[in-house]
Image 1 (cartoon, helix red, strand yellow):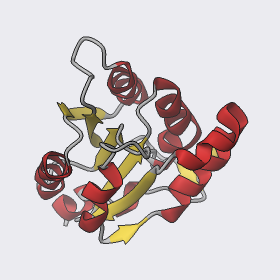
Image 2: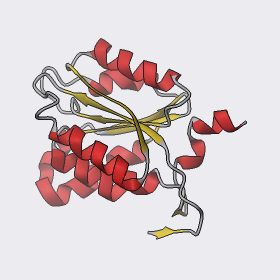
Image 3: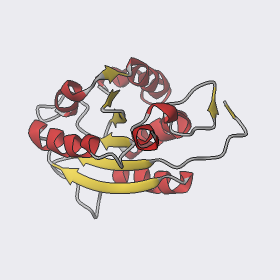
Image 4: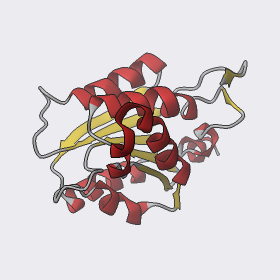
Length: 175
């Protein structure tokens, strides 16, 4: 896709890793997202790791979407079907609007790598308080696919014909 001649405008992004086993030392998916955010020119606001618990996830996300400084939230983990995977249940009630196309496109692209196993991904996205939230599986490969094929363009104001940049919370601060 193309980039218009508009000037790049960095966003303020947070990263949440949902896992009962990941730590600061072995969170390769979170590391990948943080590095990608910086490489793209965006600003990292905060990064956290929380246990796969609906209320811990929801509390962290709620604080971020209430903060006028945060434009986007990237979540890795908790989107499968195991007994503890609860990211979709935690964040869906927070959405003002869902972005159905994210999960659909993610699974379509993922099919090339993992075949029909992609149906076990409950990747999802939505808007809450003019903050965009993307939740993807916990593997580093899934985060790389989501970032490179979808998120990097949708968080870039230069991407045409459309992107999410103009719909984000920072617009409230400009008024």
